[in-house]
Every structure is written in structure tokens, then in C-alpha cells.
Picture 1 (cartoon, rainbow, N blue to C red):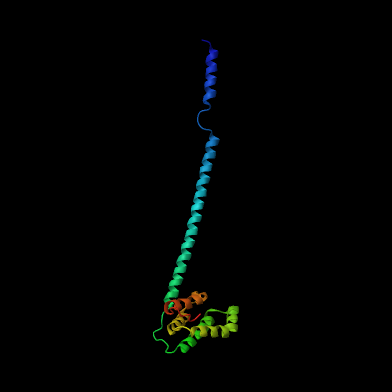
Picture 2 (cartoon, rainbow, N blue to C red):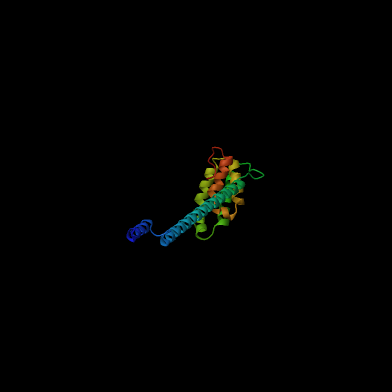
Length: 170
């Protein structure tokens, strides 16, 4: 047998089989792609966890705020005897709330408009119940400065608890 056919067979075998093992560049590219995918997934998971943590913190803060408002919306130990006196006290409590919790331009605006605002508040209060007015006085007098922007919520909480269908206070 001649050597030529064996040599041709060997060359054909090498060409058909190609180099042994995977291409190192291709392996490195696949490894980098896998690492990038993992990094992207980790970053996505971190952003999701951060977003969920912020949402939970906001929800917890909102629930704590509602609980604080609800805790303030209670009746005092003694109720006023007459609705007009209770409504006068409610208007006074609103003014004191504003004087206590605001300053500067916001307080100046309140002081300029309070005659009208308190007149309307008393008028609405007179259509309601003594319990609502007494609750509102208590809530406004006891409210901490963290709730200074929640005056409408404080008033509403008392109306919901003690007003029934009456529109008192707001």
C-alpha cells in the first residue's frame, strides 16, 4: 500500500475533526456574557428590593400617621353643654394650632385669612354635633408638630367617629 492514500486519509481525518476542544476565545466570551447576565440580574434584584423597601416604609409611615390621628380623635373627659360654646372652642383651637405649628409666610397668610376661615368653620360646626366639635378641639390641642400638615385629616377623623351624617367642623 502506498503512503499517499494514508496521508490523504490522515489529512481528511484532521480536517473533518477540526482542532481538539473548544475555542478559548469563545469560552471567554461565553464566560463574560454569563457574568454580565448575573450582574444585571443582581442589579435588577437590588433595585426591586430597594423599591419594595421604600414602598413598605412609606406604607408603614402612612399607617403610623393614621394611627396617630385616630389616637387624637377622642372625646375629652367633659363635653361642653352648648354647641355654640363648643364651636367657639373649636375655632379657637384651630387658630392656636396654626399659631403653634406655622411661622413666616404661612402664618402671615393664615393670620390674614383667619377671620373668614374661622367664621366658616364655626358656621359649619353649628350644623353638627357637640361631640364632633369637642373631639376636634382635643385633636387640635394635642396634635404634635409632625401632624401640622394634617389638620384636615384631624378634623375629618372626628367627624367620621362622632358625626354620623352631620357635616360639622370643616
